[in-house]
Length: 369
Ligand code: ADP
Image (cartoon, rainbow, N blue to C red; front, side, top):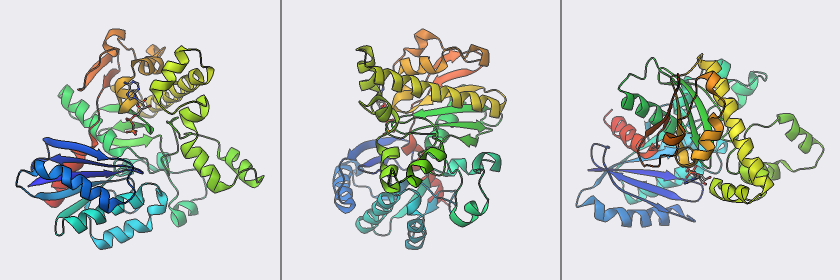
């Protein structure tokens, strides 16, 4: 039997096939511009069928963007669980309906095959109230579930355990700061393998500057725009999610590679966007050094974190007083596996993420009971 991992995004369906141990990747692919999930799943299945080599799909693992207040462990999907998830899909309206549609498409095509949901929020359920609660009347938490949930949890859990594995030390006892810098970006403070604070919040909008998301912003500024009638709230949601971040600041692109090119040619907006991006990450690293009382390692992952030596250098520049020193030559390394880039008092590593591998492992563990 083989393990299929599905990651249904807002416009794509990514799929990875693993062996029965959930350790060896046999195939990976993606269907882009998904209009209908049943059709997309059928197309994905046609691509994995040859790699099954006569075996069956024994289980399907899904990345679910949020378990909200309901779920913090991987769990077997049933129609009843799916209905509960549908009830909280408003917490991630771009992603949850897609995640659920992928479950339904797989259930229709592979009846009787166990399907498991693995939640991006789960890793952060260990955050203490001082980190997870917003300072608003507590009834907002009780009545509407308003608090920080955090996201990118599967990636943060992967890179933190990978670091411990590479160093041959137990996760317990380590203080880690992980930065997942891709289109979406988040930082996390990890103590003893558990998230104690993270930059994303009730939604994936809070925290770092992202490709098209603004990250931290004064709620008062948004109220000002809404109450004065300058902006319709639905329109504002689009602006903050899809037209802000690197794209909004640069007025040019949400893609870091485009921004480097433009900045080198003198584009002031591109320079501002890169500088602001790096500054925001530095601030979070500083705050998590305080939250953890120092750190054993700083880890970079995601498309930017794994590939962009200039951004890593700019983030870490002048942090020697905090124990963070990059080796310029090591930082220029490019390779698909993990590599160290600094070894001041704080170890600094690049660790390519592999969320699907963790989902495959969690799926196997879940169906094993
Ligand atoms: P997602 O969050 O959608 O999975 P990625 O993790 O692939 O996205 O990150 C996308 C970002 O990574 C883009 O800003 C892109 O410019 C950046 N990126 C990817 N490769 C490189 C590279 N070689 N150098 C600099 N930035 C890169």
